Image (tube, rainbow, N blue to C red; front, side, top):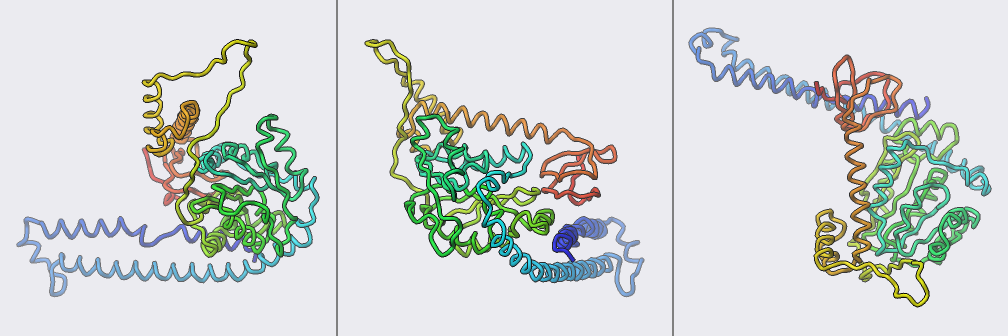
Length: 434
């Protein structure tokens, strides 16, 4: 049996919950008992016997029997799922070995042209979500590192990190990113060529340790075996300062559809749960994991500790065309303008209140950050409005996100959880709106 089929079956079974489904039944029985005990016809109630007791007493016994039956049914279901997990783990061990073989005999030897054509697949909505996640960690106060800068369009989200390092196994995989930058910024980027996947040597041995606030590994772990991923994350842990974050994309094989990519030798076998366990063993805290999208998953892991910096402000400059001998124009703000802008930045939580009020961030920079935050909030509002517009549910769906509304049987339903692609409408995933 293929592992993808077994995981798909397991996930389908795991959607059922006897305890959750029985909650409404138990409420009905309890309401019945309360109504019986508060009745005003006690004389008639007492005449109707159930053995030696009244109906109220019998209803209590019925409730206890139901409670035991539901508990037993849930325990049996939990045991069945545990056995399926063991079967998945045993079969998955073979897939881990296969991924190692695929790397040693194939992906490890791919040339620059092949590597440069590797692409991440995602929807526009998913790309916007990912960018918003990266924006949380991109901060001018800390250095940033991107591994694989040309293999994703998301690298530009790290430009605010100061300085920004970019690394890959060949200079030709770095140059396209550098060529896309203007001449001034290009000289600020720090390119770095790493050794091509030699786990016996440190890949980042020449980079400063304990300095980075963000490390982004793009479209790389999809083609590495688990041992290689652990080795790289061990080095990244040393590069990060306490509280720093590593964001990486990977082929999350907790999703059965992604396992099919392994079965066709397209990508590596890396189950999300296993990846999270390994990250925690290395000293990380898993802060976010996106795992329900076909072909595109990511994880955000943070080195334990508090993120701190001594940098008080970012140097900003503006190029202007001036007449020789004429005074150089400058942007000026009144005290009232500065006070208003800083308060708006505090309200929008651009940074800490202390950092904003102390002037650690220039007024020009605050204006830019406020504008960007408002645009993001407007985008979020637009997305929420789009999700609220119910579209007809179809069996040929690509899955739904929590809060999304659809029309099914002429009724509007809202997803109560993120839903993987299914060919049948499962009411346990949805809440009837009207």
